[in-house]
Length: 340
Image 1 (cartoon, rainbow, N blue to C red):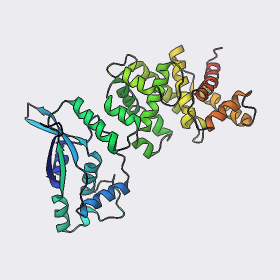
Image 2: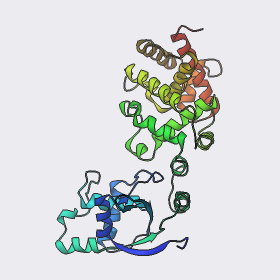
Image 3: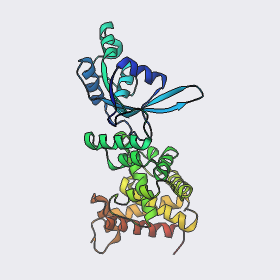
Image 4: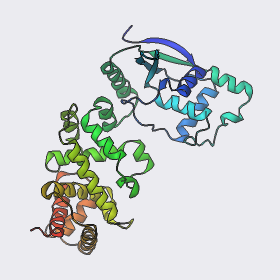
């Protein structure tokens, strides 16, 4: 088969039935999460209703089940468009319609025209997964603004990222404390956050922004020796924070301070093998937050509380700012464990 794949046509009805029967896989491991909001979805459906063209989608053959002689098709590019079609026809609660007619309200002829709409499909055939990922990379590097973590997720579906995903699936920290918005979840900001914490622990110290994350994603792509240790420590630290019953307006559930707190708790766990008690931690964090507010207007060059406050509200991700925050929280945690 040509490296460009074969351009064919499929009707919306054919693609819908493939999705309905599960023979069309919308979210292979290299695909990103859905990021379209309802307005985007409505505009896309309107394109079909108006019989206007939209860009081709890319498909590839999945593995054949030799026992039952069936195969599945993978969506390389076009996940959001196909998902929107399925949600529209099935009246999915994930697609709230305000400005266009619902599918059930269309006339018989309009429904027929919708299902008869021709979609241009580029069939890549049966090619190695490495080539599928390369196609995905090139399509999305040109057409769409994927963030760095989404690209890494697509290119390195390895042990480091898998560990981070497993942590998210089995951890209630971010949902319990409402750390991220729905939009941030959809853009994988929670995954980016966990990878940043993991990379900081592996680095053994803080760094600017997310500059070292890719290093560890690549380094531990095939094997991650600290997988179990990292998962256990992350979950124990998260559980401790949740059980400390911090108030909803607490500084410690804001992204920057929660990041530092998680890193320093995991470092404490690695160092001593255990963590402080819930009440002890809650009291220490409450006292520290009070000190930060009392001292926030003091001389930043001389007052460690003023320094912390400054670097928390400055809105930067500098190494120096992270170190200042880390040193103060580390000091408080050490004291809470009666360790000098």
